[in-house]
Length: 478
Image (cartoon, rainbow, N blue to C red; front, side, top):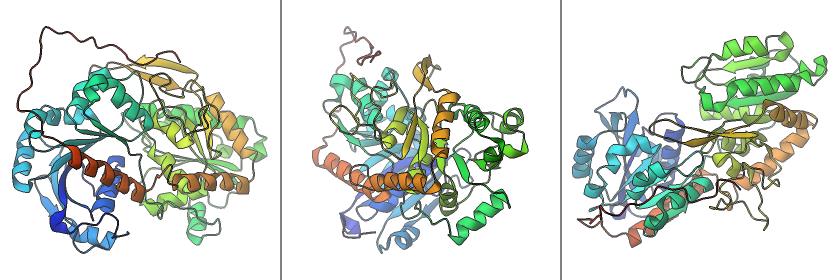
């Protein structure tokens, strides 16, 4: 770490209470929180109210400063952890506000986990601001989230789509809010290209494939949940194999790093038995947690990382693959389209607007050469009582199979060259999908907030005779 970047002595730093997953664990949310804390600990002091479903250390607190010092080269970081099941409660939060006296609260994850925090905003924001690093998977713009967004002072959107949604939902009530685009950033020294002759890569290949002659590898790394569309992905792989002569199909393999069975998804072994049960189909499952450097090897073994999710706020495995120099095949929806770098009619990186909220309609077809997009062929509104409506973007397995055929026709060298172009862009100033750039953007956004923030008024007068329609304010057809 460059200690000089925005470095402040410990006693001069603002303290931020981060409510999210326990930053020691390996969830996607915890990974983002950990990278932010690590890359900004020279500028902020941190207190993590760290959640887990049933936290084994509930009620305990730890000082993580020494660990952060070792990772960063600092000598004076201040990072504390308070463990809780769930994400806490009003009583616990009031205790921490009294004990730690933070200068701001920062939230990361779905707003429904923080309804109790938003309900306290009148109490909290009289003294300190609320910062929300948020994401939303799809349109129509969720007007049911408006009270949550209104409870925040700084809304940092992980995707361009999320920033657009925040602004659309808030409308006039967003005029006193601060917005920032803070895409996910990862450690690009961990997720990095490796040579095919790397001994560790050769060893992992042999552990997976044995002595089989495999020359094309497809990789999937994500959770076994319904919206990830894993059965459709397996079907796409089957359609792809069926277009090849059997001797060429036998040299292809599909590795899935996910749970075999999940109540939130399906029984993938049963799907495999239905679709891909011949010896030459070469489907392999990896269902044990592995460290990031091991995952990086798997991305490097792969010729493509695939993610056909029908709702996806970002798609962290795509970022990992791009940084590893591996091409991506992905459904054009949510934050995944950010990572494909679609180009608009002005030649610029596509930014959603109320007129064109998303590129899932295939308005723009030019994109980064590392990306092999699969456009949805249908869109339906799904919902539940907490989230009454959201578009579900579905792509056809047949279309995904075409992208696989396209990649398979290239040489390994050609595929890697495309992947390296993706990495070059991802670490550039424009994309900045690295933890260092993410940290800088967070520092800049929060410093700006502290410079301009004024406490919430003690009282708010509401005209109960005024009825505001909750109507959509962006195009539904575009």
